[in-house]
Image (cartoon, rainbow, N blue to C red; front, top):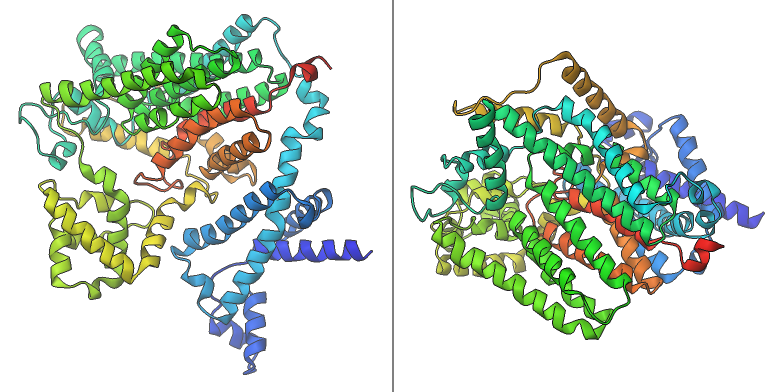
Length: 632
């Protein structure tokens, strides 16, 4: 009875924590309730009036929390890994909510009542999340999963080759809905620049760098390879088919077919390596019906092809670690180098994903040192030839250095917003030498550093940059928490689940088409037939449903895929599964490059997309059956 009473108290505390509104309760509300001058009473009332009443949802939340506490062991009995992950999730939830709702964590300690609310929320989160981690682990990899006949006896095709063909065909047919709806393909905000550069037209990107020649307007800001590929199909459409729309649609269809083949191949590999039919079917349903996947399959964006070749690279690593050989075959070396080159040609920071993860393969077999070293040499050589020979020869300049400085520029921008009055004339001059001071101080956007990057002066010299970082360091010492807040505010969406607006695809598509047509060079247009229009409406309704249904809408957040990656990483360490770890490491490297990027995970999904596509396959591989389990 005593234990049950403790459980009820924990459930009440956790439920209150999730319902707690961190906003400051006004004096008017408290005065309306009481005219007492007691500070204790007024603080208690502020806490109570911060608990939101969501009706029946309060009861549902309490029941779910009770189920977690009833199933999971006590905090002391939890494994250390579960405690660490759970506490990290609790702190992420606490600070993520503050940043998401108020743009700062200052609200958490604004007064005695706010501190009390913070302590209550933190206590409830810390009690709940470690147990939640334990329950989730048991659900997906423990006894519940092993004894779930529905998962282990799901639909399957015995012949792996036939299975792959059927999955490929199924994805093509289902994704065809999006292809017809968004004919000739989905545009992005970058599509205009890419197509314009393919035709050597002037773009805003060219204004951010020192052009080598005014006759060459292409810049290695967007992938040159992707620019040439997309440009080829647009030009083919205009020249051979009489319509840029048809050329774009041919590209869209080919990209859709290739992406479907890559994902069918990934499920084929999971089948080969003993992942249960039920787990593969869950991943297949995700690939087929989660809108990010089919929309990127029909989207004119380098991210789609980048994710495709990243998946192929991961599947190659999967083959290597599964073969138990003392040698890496020459065909695997060649494929690895080709995939790596395509990865960094499609996204410049992709090179770090490969070169920083390849050496870890030696953890599997130290005898692989020669082929791994050979691969690294070839990749570096390819990078050198591309960056130092091909691009200069073609008179194509590199992209602006501001992309690599998005973090310090964002920190400076926030500093100038809140402490601009403390900046000396000398410091102002040092900042203004590398970035427009007025623009940097007035265009701070907490969730995105694009505006801070836009203030960069392309004529800045190396000495100017050195002087800027000297000032940057001095400012950090004055207000270090401002820098921490600037960075956290720019990236919390990768860890705290904020539902991304799925309709952004449609807005970006319409805006992209309008932008690329704005100068009169092109005449792209959406299909206006009844079938395409009806399918677009259905897709928009479907997106709205996914965004609004609680729990299910978590798949519309960046954070859920990042946490799935972290869970898989911890699983590989706890289970001492080095094969799985070899697949996790490249994704961790990718995550590091994302955290050095310009945008929060609650705004842009294109940075998260490769993780959302690849991590389910990696996580599924981590739950593969052993030979004895397969035949038991």
